[in-house]
Amino acid sequence: MQIQYPFITRLLAEEEGGGYLIAFPDLPGCMADGETIEDAITQAQDALEAYIKSCIANGDPVPPPSNPQNFSGQWRVRVPKSLHAALVMKAKQEGVSLNMLTATLLAEGINKEIVCKPKNLVKKQMVPKRKIIKSGIKLKPPAVVKKAIKKKASAK
Image 1 (tube, one colour):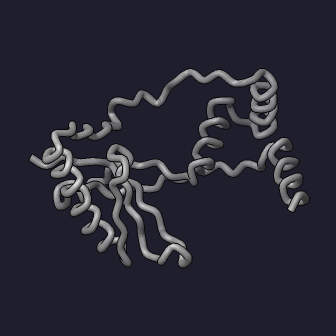
Image 2 (cartoon, rainbow, N blue to C red):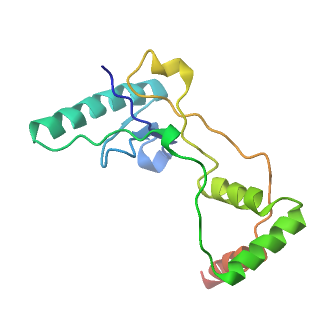
């Protein structure tokens, strides 16, 4: 039986050595890299296997893989009244709902990437490849963010 863990792939900058990095969010410290995405996936499979074997050998519990089906996509969040008001005004200005605006801002905040399990690698490989889902809405940063960016730039 194969255990499948979701993973996140990141393109490494030249300063970091180039290539690709794969990390398993469910397994702290379990990551691998490679010059190509294929190399990174192969190395990640080896790292995953070694991580699990190490847990078993040391008598540590093997963390279970997270399951996207366990997430409803809903949660309650509390924010300051001023932020709530600013988000409502921005949503009205953009002509979208508050939910759509906040979901879009959150997606942009994590580089517009959502980890998913694609169909093409599940059969063939132990680890799923990520799929990038991009937001179709482009928003201007709120005035508060623009001011903070200008303030930070002028401080340098």
